[in-house]
Length: 452
Image 1 (cartoon, one colour):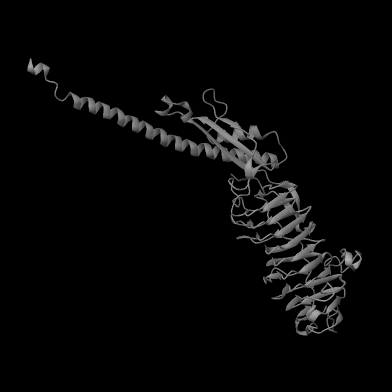
Image 2 (cartoon, rainbow, N blue to C red):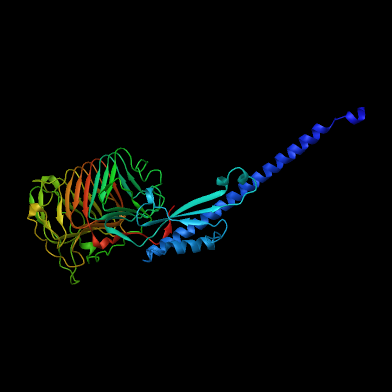
């Protein structure tokens, strides 16, 4: 009887069976997790491909065909929407947040995934839903009036209450960096559009609210009349603009700087007799408005091989009636506007300021008309406009290789042309007003690409 009633060792068997079941459960769970991770990666690939394919249909001018194309591409990536049992589902939610609007296409792919263990408890755990967003590209958003050509780094930095008004036109940063644009310290942008070549400059957590390191401190961005409207990522780069011809001059015969004296003057452009027919004149340096003097600049092409310097002149302007002028700054020449200077220069064929009657400045020929200052791309010297200056520059400023800084309460109005520079830094309550410049191209979406 003792032998029959002996139960020693039975607990070990029960524990062993229990542990075996638990181990099998963990193994099944591990297989489920691994399988779901793999399937999620595959669903993401299918959603990405479907979004780009649908965006291409929009870019090609065939809207309405996105669903068919997205379904076909999802199937090519292993997610068939036509299966009788557990088919994948491709839907098109409305793009929101930082990638909203008709320029973007969002796709969501949903697929039930078979599981070993988790499906016993909840079928929801075995369903993968993944979304992707692509830019349709191709669409023109606005003409460009501020083209910042720097390919990397921060190309637009606004701080301390500065204002940038792009009237009926757009701003484009060619920077591929995530910090391409910064608007801080109560600064503001008003434009039709703000285009970013980079697709990573703004994340979904900050682009819709402008609460980020890029736009802080009470700053605002108004795009096409929408307060705090988001910029458009993934646009095609702005430029290159059609640049004016290089003036012909003899650098060895440039006139010395006539500035520095007291009084009222009528200057330029520097001329000289030369053996080469049609050779223009040049200045080694040109200082306008020194010692409180006033100066009228005659119409013509001004080549300055050193420093073009506008200082604080008398009677409200550093120069009076500088209409029909074109400044060419080759080599290592620089432009400086400072110390309370009030500059009034107008490009050939452009509208003169109200102070000069608002007429049309003399023409300098089609190659120079509409452009006031040109610093070729080989000249990378920075351009500085400082000291509370008030500049009316009736023409475009083209300096594709130069960094432009406007500071210390300065105001600059470009009522005819735009700004074409490597970068723009605005500080200290400055104001910059620019208008549409057809020569800089348009703010346009690039080719279809995945953005999120």
